Structure formats: C-alpha cells, structure tokens
Image (cartoon, rainbow, N blue to C red; front, side, top):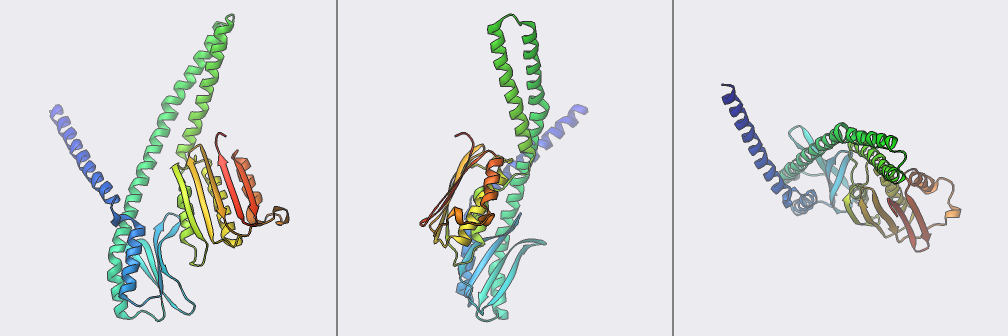
Length: 333
C-alpha cells in the first residue's frame, strides 16, 4: 500500500515537472520574440499613434524596480503644448505609462483610439515584467542555494583540511622539505577559505543592476536636446556585488558631469566587466576643464576618487579642450 502511494506521488511529481518544463520552454520562446522587446513594442506603438492622431511627440516608459524607464521616444515637446499621460496597466498592476504632447487636448475619439492602440502595449509590458519576476526569483533562489552549500559544506571541509595540515606540521617538525610543502598547502587552504567567505557574502547580497542598465536608464530620461549617449559595454558578468555600487556611482557621476557641464555633442561609455575585473571609460567631446581651477567638491571628483580608493580600483581623469576621459579599472593589473 505504501509502495503504491509512493509510486503515485512520484508519478504526479514527474508530471508537474514535465508541465513546468513545457511552460518554461514556451516562456523562453516568447522571451526571444520581438513582441517582448519593450523598445520594439514602444517604438511601434508611437509610430501607430502618430499615424492615428494629431501629436507632436510622445514617450513610452516601462515600470522598473527603481522607477519608470523610458524605452521609446518620438518627436519633441514644444512650449505651450498639452501633455496627456495615459497609464498602462494589466489588471491591478501598473506596467508603465505613455505621455503624449499635442497642440490641443485629445478629443474623446482620440482618447478611444489611444486606449485601443495601447492595450497590446500594456499586455506586452506585463509579459516583460512577469518574465523579469520569474528570472529574478530563479536567480535569487539559486544564489541562496549556492551560499548555503558553500557555507554549510565546502567551508567546513576546507577548515577541516586546514586543521589536518596544522597537525601534520606539528607531527613532522624535523623535516624541512615536508614542512615547506605543508606551509604552502596551509597558505592555499587559508586563501580558499577567505575566497569562500567572500563569495558567500556576495551571494547573499541583493543583485545589482548591470552598468549598462544604469547607463541606459539615465540616457532614456534625457530630453531631446541632450548629448547623444553611445553605449559600447561588454558585460560578461556584472561587477562583484561588493564592488558594484561604487563602480556604478563613479560611472554615473562621470556621465552626469559630462551631460551637465561638458557642452558635448556625444558621450561614449565603453569598456568591459567580468566580475572581479573590468575597465569602463566615459568620454565626452566637450570643452573639458582645468582640474586646478575646479572648486573643492565640484563635479564630485573627490567622491569618485574616494570610492575608487576604498575598493582598490584605479581612477584616471584626463581633460583637455577637446574633451574629458574618465576611466575606472578594477581587478588584476
């Protein structure tokens, strides 16, 4: 009887796993489609709106963890125009908004057209956010599992190995060659223990957005007359969580300085990131500045240098009358 019950439970579990596998496979197929690319969806929606109603410009934003992120923009808001904001939602969940600028207020017919055109946009954005939720939950649970395994299994095993090496050193003090090898082994074990502790701490920290995500968010919020932001980042892996906030803060400060003060037409953010090592440069083609003439605290230069020093990174700031280059590098030289 118990065997039959166990067999039935195992069969039911296999069926649930099979259904979950099929569902995840469909999710992956949908995630790769253009219909779930918020930039493509937003741009197409603005084109359809401009063909259907009289409008000067528009912005479409997707709700993010840190607030709305502009994914598409068309036209330019002119002084004296009317701005109409249309929220996007699926059920009770807000997924973004559309802001339309026009010479006159939208008529009732225009509002009906807008609602009809934006319904598939809201559904697409809802699907994007749902997939993000699933991915973030999966990543969070896997990080927690890895942290537990490292802390509860690998960490104690390495500690036991270290104690065994210490005992061997005590038992064979007269053999200098063996003692030298054991000391080297002990040093390696100690380094591994520290690496495990650092990795566990990183895994238990909340994942940070990638540098590219941060830069794209800032670029999406800029008005039309701002410098062009050219992003050329190769991110195999985001920076180590313990380093990520300081690296992001340096890049953001350099980018905002270039936007606000450089009078540049183009700003290029380029470089690479691979967890424990990376190099990111923010370059603008503006007028530059003289470091000796910058008042204390201006441009956040001191704060950038303090952050770089705190995490053991290098920070290089070069400015001429042809532009400014800020480079932050971390990891092995």
